[in-house]
Length: 471
Ligand SMILES: [Zn+2]
Image (cartoon, rainbow, N blue to C red; front, side, top):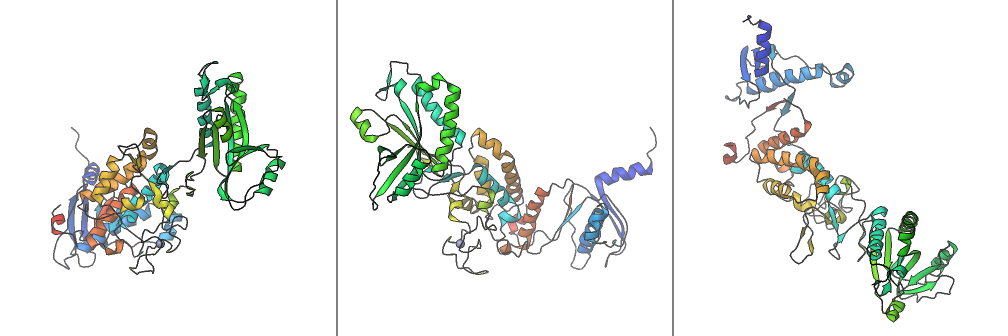
């Protein structure tokens, strides 16, 4: 076997250990040490014995200096030249990250969830797979795309069409059965609507349904000003047999009708199968099926409106998501304790708190809303980990949320493993002990994807419970 060259032996050593030779920084007396890589190394000693001089001012300083040296000259000009520590030689270094005990953040808004970036991932999670529930009716509010609405109508017509020529559906022979597309332009509001109805006539519409009665727009329609009305503008009507006659034409007309209805009624559409006039239907003894659908997140029952659900809706640092009263601070005054009277300390606008993940169907078939982002951040790290791990999602939601959930779980698991199970995610950063803050910032480094990074910590267990020191 060939004799190993000294070069090879250094490479070998470099892969396995960090070697410091002749360190003289501050009070260090020309010391040399070798420590294994990929291990947690503790440096202990009396106060003033040079622990920090070795860890921070020598090893960390050199790691950072080399990192800066490796950057482009363009990047370096912003960072400035770093002094070389007083040491003969160091090898086996990785990019260095120093985590000291300074309070993690002086920003009064910072929490465990925000420093660890868990909150950023939760915002994306809620925006992608969160489900909206009206705080008034407690019903789920769903938003449909135009295509989904057209498919809903198409499916209805297809179901009716399979009945056969002689079969009566809803009391009418299926061939003659009508499907009407309405724009519900007035929903339970008072007024005469004289000008509005005239404008629809001018736009080319011919019929409306006013409080359940079909009327021609060229008729003189008088409404009681002080009464609440329901006005549905007829956009198009289809006979069920038309689908079989020319499917392509049917689908095209339907698509146009859906789009027009949604645009006229600002996000709403009413699909009526059967006789649209309530009185006429009663006379003929036929059934009518009436569906009010929404292309926006607006509750059809009570009109509760959600804004676009995007990650910034869940950010108390964004004007879009912050409580408009306290601007996301949660307290009446900066650095005060008195909760904001609008959000009660929740810091987010009301709509954000009506988006939930993990809804469950109750035994009676009704839906339990699940957990909003505030509930989730009130959980301890342990409970949050269990909740995220047990989250039941549809296959489509799972696909969307896969990466996000992994990032959240990794960080929670790390904090669990370093003994911080008892902390809640909404714990204010400026109330953490030095040791807690340090571990949490270490958890946040998990996201920086620095493979083989070297972490230099100063007295990481200060301020932790004794039982956690043993971990
Ligand atoms: Zn507020």
